[in-house]
Length: 223
Length: 405
Ligand SMILES: Nc1ncnc2c1ncn2[C@@H]1O[C@H](COP(=O)(O)OP(=O)(O)O)[C@@H](O)[C@H]1O
Ligand SMILES: [Mg+2]
Image 1: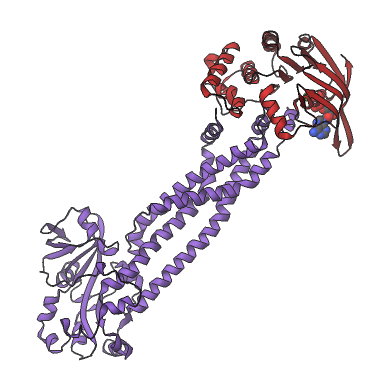
Image 2: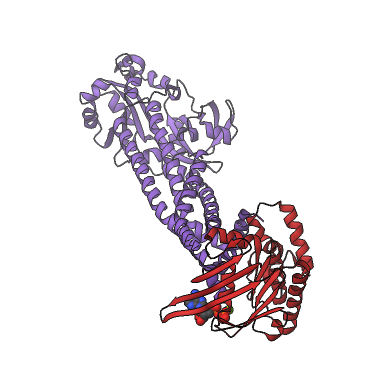
């Protein structure tokens, strides 16, 4: 297993009481899985993704990612794990507005001490793959929504991750563009055997998963 | 993509915010550098004045302030030259080297210079009445050691001692070092002052004081060409120390009731007080900019953090640690500090150089080492001001941004 959870729960303390966002979830994804996570709004999809990324700590339960115990790792260890092994794709693209496309792709590598020029070549390579090599010196705002999301995909790939976590990556795109992005993700998944866990609302998108998880009220309903 | 590159690109991207962020610190550093530049020259001037004057008593027009005296304003008050005769014929003992002067600030080739009229010593010696009064030249030198009086103030720079000017023709002038440099003058050159033709008799060595911007000419010529006939702005007197303590000043006041008679001691103490005040002001300013500059930079870093919440959250998401976030923000603050320090130094030095001669009659030179101090001080202030905003930025949790989306 690449990533595995046991009895994973996350409760939020809220002024109106305890919110049980994720309850007793047991999951396991292998290298190369394409997992889609669906469920109604507020069912705990994002919370689950955050737990898998080590961005929040579980109230109870364990998360094993490769050799790492995410539930007990320190903040700095978690940051290191994210920067080395995990790629992120968000609904709002989450690009840095003042950096060029190329620099946006390169930003995760600023944490590693690799040679500048090989990084540079690899980033351009990725941009070529997502069809944006000719736009590498543009700012994000000069690109269309679909193009911005493809930059985000290139950025998610630049640290050669084992796992890509995507939270509604097509949520802000019209259907045709959504298909384009999904195809790129599928290609990455097949070619590089990168595990993808993708939260989505759209039934079309969920079709792409070989594992389809449906969550309701913080509990897995289908697996 | 290195961190510093990210910081620089972001800084450039929001360059309009630089102005508000840097205003306080630039002005603060500028004021300190300006005051310090003036103070340094002024402190030096105290020493040099003591040495240079070769006199320890000044007879000034009633109502003159020391500032008037140094700045040589166009409307600075004067009194009749015949006061010199009054002193000479009074048979006071303990008076030596009576030297009347008329000083006026004039424009020469658009340059502000001080024109000082003096009487060369050969003319003083030539006056029969003065000779008989026994008050001329070297007669009293033996009993009155002028340099001893000056040494008692701790100033011994005899190199700067102004040599008595033995002879000077009506159409000759002696030129200060700065003026000579600016107008490319050397001995024997001709120069036009207030539409009168002069020959450069001598060029003085650089002293670092207003003397560098001064032209000396014959008193009676200066009176004529400035239209202030028979008037002088000061009479410098070398008084014997013993005589001063025995009430020479009081006797002089009796002879010249309508003047202000003061000793170098008093002048120097006034100027030392001014210098102390300037030093105090710069310390007060130091404290003020520590607060205002630090708060203002900290405030703009905080505004910046709020504006970049999403971005900083994204960076945390992709693996930036808290300390990387601190690094980004403190690096930015440090760069702001460097810019603020350089700008502050330039503002302070420029205003000193431009305003110094006009306001204080002081010729202010840039002090390059202050650039280093300005930058270090400014960096320190920026970093101190940014510690809290950076700390708070580290608290931004990436998941909040993701859940808002
Ligand atoms: N930081 C938080 N504090 C309190 N409650 C939260 C927080 N984050 C999420 N929740 C709550 O947890 C539940 C699950 O949220 P989320 O995981 O974002 O759902 P989804 O992504 O499926 O829409 C919701 O009821 C939400 O209001
Ligand atoms: Mg969500």
